[in-house]
Image 1 (cartoon, helix red, strand yellow):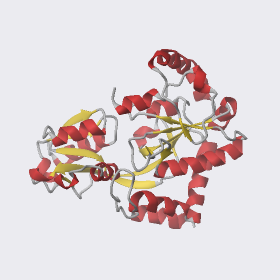
Image 2 (spheres, rainbow, N blue to C red):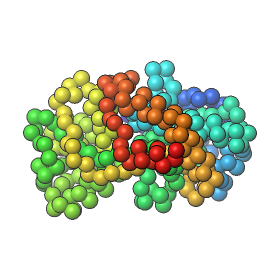
Image 3 (spheres, one colour):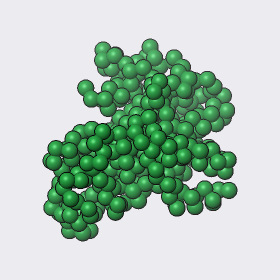
Image 4 (tube, rainbow, N blue to C red):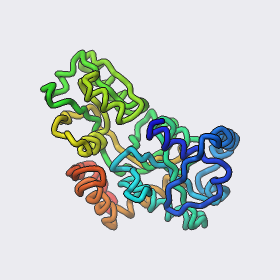
Length: 317
């Protein structure tokens, strides 16, 4: 079982765990024997969960459920003690505090690890109340889930092997580029290839490690992913100098906290928390911590705040 699939197992909780509060904690991974029963429980409550707005769902459940993807550093990860951490997680913590005050459900926040394939389904069906991830807020996903105000702006970029001497996107013509399945890099690569006539062949991998392996072995000449996630993955490599990230982006995407679709009360609350963090300078502190300082997984990413994000900060002051 891959680490991604092990993390998703934690999202399929059984009845014995369902009412045990974990304060700002990591949800234990359910044992395989309990997964079938857990899936039945999830399916049986899915319709009811979707029908309820977030506030009512939290009150009914008596608990705030937050999904996070541990392999989305520096937006979401497990820290040295195994607890959820990251730039997006900081926002989710603040939103959870406001939700607790709004709903009266205090001292009961559960973080549930999710994988890249199931995260939107869990959010859409109401099993999690928000999603901390490197989540691109685009029109296609907007038909399934909702989004907070943007917390970051990122580019889909391409990593290459230094020894292949590829320095521009043009050199990927008729080559294979690997992407992680279900990510927006799929569409970004396809759109670029169609617009430029590059004839790029897309290979899809189940996760970041599998995608990088294809690049490392030369099965693919490029590996497309959100630029920050590529930089984070590269910084953690012992041979990081053997790989380069091409400077020209394939697309620009706003990243946001995932919330329920068509839930104006939840969106208003989340947007208010984000605006308050920007006004108070708290968001800037989080940004420095995760993008300008050394991370637990490697060197400092040294990614300055984008002009778009600076403009958003100024607009709320």
